[in-house]
Each structure stands twice: as structure tokens, then as C-alpha cells.
Image (cartoon, rainbow, N blue to C red; front, side):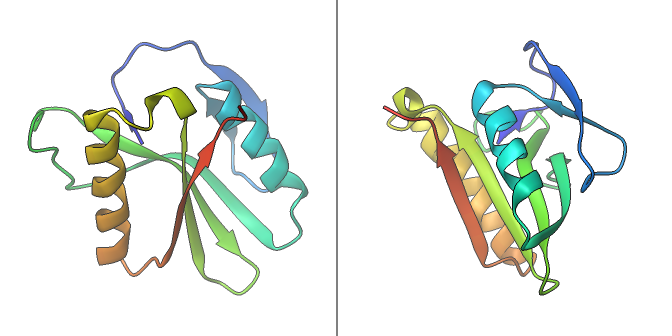
Length: 119
């Protein structure tokens, strides 16, 4: 989950399972996009999906996105958030991940998880 308006270097790529250009904002996001592209159980990928209506209690003016919203071959949705291991214990990171999980839970998504870089 990331602040939609943050200024971070981006990498553009084209994936068969994604409509249009995909933009990744980290090495973790890029690597996971490549993994999902090869995963036969994933039939559709959306990156940086707006969390419409989500407001962070500390920064209500910011708009946030989820890193990956994928469609599985069963038709179910899968959501993944990419995060660096070194940021996992930061209070803001925890708050935003909890917010993302709750947001998607209220939208009927039970397959929510995080993707962490290697040690």
C-alpha cells in the first residue's frame, strides 16, 4: 500500500495479464509482477489500485493504492502488498497494512497478503 502522490522512481512494463502499461515503484513490486505473470493460476493483474473511500486516520487527505489486485482462475480476487522487511516494524507501515487488509475484507476479499524482500 502506498501514498498515490508520493514521488518515487517508476519502471514501466507490459504484462500479458494486465491491460495497458504496468508501473512498478520498487524492486519487490517488479519481481512479484514477473512472478505473477508466470503463475498459471493468475489470469488478470492490476497494479496500484485505488482504495476508493479509504482514509488514514493520521493523514486523511492522502489517497492510497494497493500494489496488486489479481484475478485467479477460480474467479476469486487476491490482493498483495509489497513491503521492505526493514519497514515492517514501523507504526505507519503497520497501520497502512492493517487498513488495506480491512478495506479489502469489507469488499469481500479473503486472500490478502504481503510480499517481503529477501534477507
